[in-house]
Length: 165
Image 1 (cartoon, helix red, strand yellow):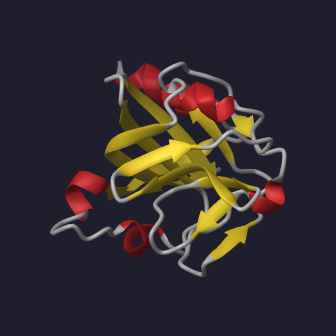
Image 2: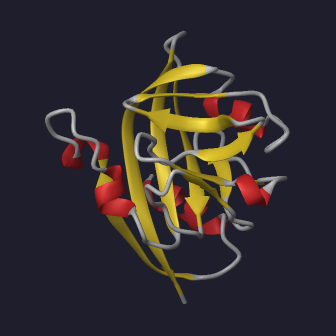
């Protein structure tokens, strides 16, 4: 049920949530092959992305990521010691980066993407495609998020901005 899903998401955080606002939905905001993730989400702190995927084997999953720091198109990798990824499908615990200095990928062509190791994106989304590369960043917890899929199609992304109590 919707309430169980909300309780699970709220339970990922150590603080109480006052407001949970949907600021981006790929199916609504992206028209004519225009990726509007950055238009809707840049420079907003405390965002939670839910990414619905389908792997090449046909498995459907939802994983997520939280960014305390802001997204932008600076072509930089950002530090975020409080960011994490999780498997919504598995109702996993949050997986925090072992390398917070390389937590967020802020490039114009990427959607919500987490972690860089050896100059490779770890858990990434780009033009309705995505994937993960083995890394020490999350000690392969990203594999739990994607169900082991190294590459996948993205069928939906929703981003929420969180206001804490």
